[in-house]
Image 1: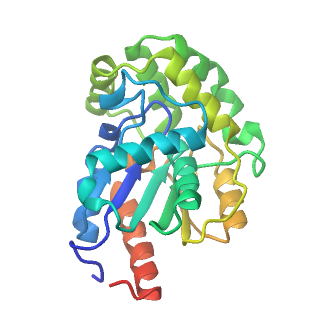
Image 2: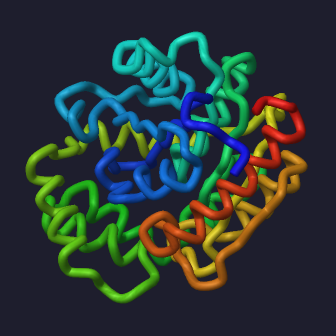
Length: 261
């Protein structure tokens, strides 16, 4: 093990309609693997911030997250950190890395995408268009069932789905916030390559976003692409230990390369 607990934190970012609790035990799993603090944030409109209004563009959402980062973790301000992000969270991570290159040490993208690199029918599989519409109008119980169908390729885990449904009732995402986030994600377009190393991770059985989107990102960013043959969109849920191993290997390589141990 190269990295040490007192060193730079890792910040996790989720995607559309998800809150930090949807990482389940992955933060503790990754922290134990890296021996470093692993922290999370909620998007405005989700989780503990469900009563707030979500911005409708990736840069504005990123600005909201940066403000929250400063408020929740004052002890981490001024430090560099690594970003690990899934789906729309990956778009926010890329924008953050471009906005604050002196702070973001690396970015790990999980099943993410960008307009301009991938067509809309790859960024959101056409088979899911009706389900996405139903997610906006359905109640929390049905919506979480639909999200499971789109994002998880393994057999139903009823205990996890019940947790999702409980959180959806406790911290409901409003229709307006859901539409703002969907609009923000649909318009995101990567225009530059971050200065920091970027790693792209993809579940080849992703039924929501085509794995070709991760290939396009990796090509554009000149980034390493690592794939899991059986996992779907919610890779941390389906292949958490494998993902933690991949991130551990990638980040140790970054810190060896830049002598930041």
